[in-house]
Amino acid sequence: MRSNRTTRALSATALGLTLAFGAAACGNDTGGDTSAEVSATEHNDADVAFASEMLQHHAQALTMVDLTEGRDLDPEVQQLADEIRAAQAPEIETFTGWLTDWDEEVPDTGDAMEGMDEGEMDMPGMMSAADMTALEQAPDSEFQTMWLEMMIEHHTGAIDMAEAETEQGQYKPAIDLAEQIAESQAGEIETMENLLAS
Image 1 (cartoon, rainbow, N blue to C red):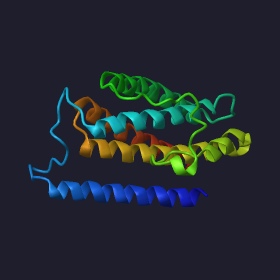
Image 2: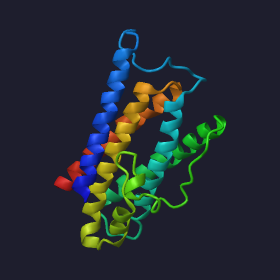
Image 3: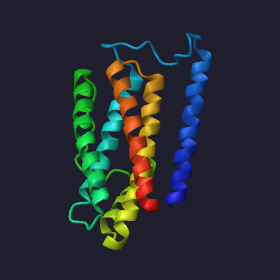
Image 4: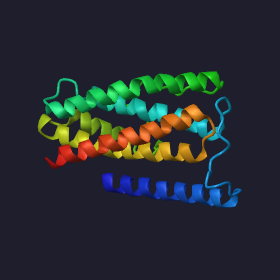
């Protein structure tokens, strides 16, 4: 199941990149800047999609962090979970603020364990409801490895979404945050891969 979802996610990512590069090739060559004209005040549809989808993506990550509570984890893994919460909770507030300011709908993230059936998982790296249930019910002997593997996949999807924003977004604060997310989550992926290898 996981390999099939990963294949679909990679295919969707490849398609997205193909479309992005195709759109860039059709635009004016202005020194390699393929995004819309960056603005400190104006936003476009890509900015709205980024804020809306990353808000939901972060909410699921925080739910995954919540599932570490009461678990017997290595100190390094617990520290990583705490760092993810500290970084992503304020970013959710930022996304909510932007969407509110733009008079856009703020997604309901009341229960990130639900609403992620196969047909609804169009965001890269999102876990299905079945995945989340499996993680919640995993015995302590398997939980930590499963959590790290799932969070690596989740972070990889977030990086894909952030890179799409840097290429297509217009609102400079959103582009800046996307660059920050891509950089920080790439570092966390490296940490998690090292933890799995140790």
